[in-house]
Length: 230
Image (tube, rainbow, N blue to C red; front, side):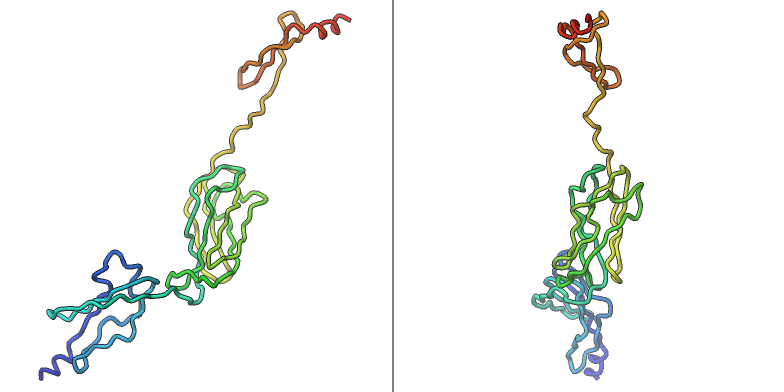
């Protein structure tokens, strides 16, 4: 009778109890985390962890004293690529200039691990915004160790943008908002010539005129006066 009762008991698996808040992931969907005891032993043969890293496992059974496993190391997945994930997005930039922070895109498997053996080409496009990429922008890049990097993206029009990345049949991703500021004002000014008060042109010091116009006064130029008197 006692053995029969034990066989009906369930042993519940609780992942990473000792390292809660520090573990890299958890049990993947589809894992079998509760098993019946058979002859005093419960066996878990369908446990799947969804991210690479180190884990400890805990087991419990009602009011019985539980136990914790030793460390289990899960290596990075070499599974099939399934989706893209943007791992770094620039937040600001200036019109006419390449974004100072590169946009980086990881190729991941279904469990969120970077597929380091993948070298396929990732393409970036503008999803929303007042303009498009400027000519000369590099909008396609091959992945290196599963990661594609875009360091030459240029916008000519100020405003807010979002970007999308794609790679064949893989599920794509959309960036956070990027704000592009207007280009800096040109330092080239409009020049005017003032006379010396007597209707004659002359050289003199530069000074700033109305509306940002630089006015160059010319005074006391004898040879120009001589030419005017001829």
